[in-house]
Image 1 (tube, helix red, strand yellow):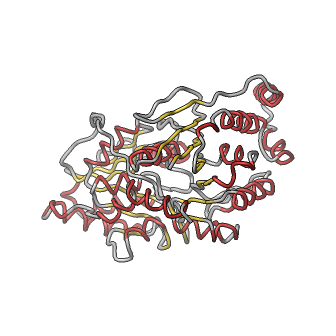
Image 2 (image 1 turned 90 degrees about the horizontal axis):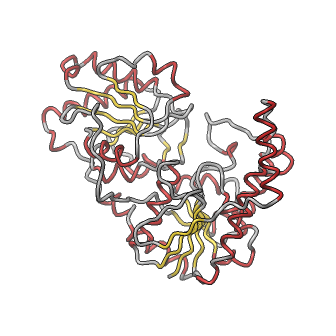
Image 3 (image 1 turned 30 degrees about the vertical axis):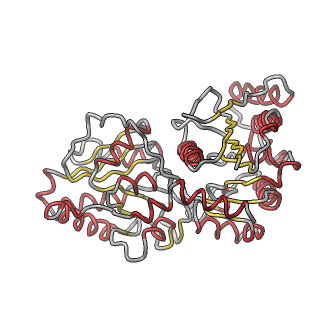
Length: 411
């Protein structure tokens, strides 16, 4: 089967979305599909053994000129007008010019004659999806991958951002769900969540979880990391709603109740954390807590494989339909995962109701209890401190991916 992939970016250093896109593309190749990847990464990037073509931005168009005029106006006046423009037009001029550029790039490569066209995005952009909406002749082959709830006001609480252009964005996603032949989601709970808003999701959807991508050559561990300690790692951006307050309090309570752990325990928080700067500043010099900003992807993967416990921190909520992009990496690292999130979450669903290391993200006592249990196992039976979930590895590999795609396309 020939698959034309249109990915907003394949630069793994620019976002978690790009990381999972590259992992998916790599596993499509491993599954034996014939690929051509068109990407809008703004620089040449090559993936081993895959035909990757950079779509260039069209800088000779009215939309490009308008987008630059808005940028200069905002920079000089300090008046941010993009939101008001989006309320009227639905999207910024930059987004529209990018979409037109991607559409033109797609049309140049139709001689590839794909059996399936897969659009991948990142964040709240969905530029490739918007481009496909402008190419109705290709929609019978189109699989739209929806990685997160969208529009933003459809995120579960406590996320509460409502864009001025929310109505236009609703119409946009409705069109995707109705026009695409297939829809793909990384999470079953996300599929069900979006189906509650867009009924067309029900009959054309598949689950394609974030994929395991094994790096042949991982980077060396950072100097600040000490091996053979009881180490707990949260890697990833700390969004406003991913509040580390209770994690930190639980860890300090764990140290208080297990004083001997002060000599060997470390909590690592790695990733963008600016929105929690005031809170984290209190702990910046704590001998058992290490707080670092962004690190390169391969360095983080090395840490995930060498820590004692990987942490997945979610928002305090009733439901979390997200599958974190780092989940497959944590599975293949074969270390216990400490889940801090709601009872109804995709991560907890996959690990199972009987999975022992779970706490609500604001339950300090349960967080401390889980850490203590993990610590005692580490001290007394370290060989038992493994995740050991071959079923989840199989779920996130090219074998399951191939079966899923061949099954739906053969219908």
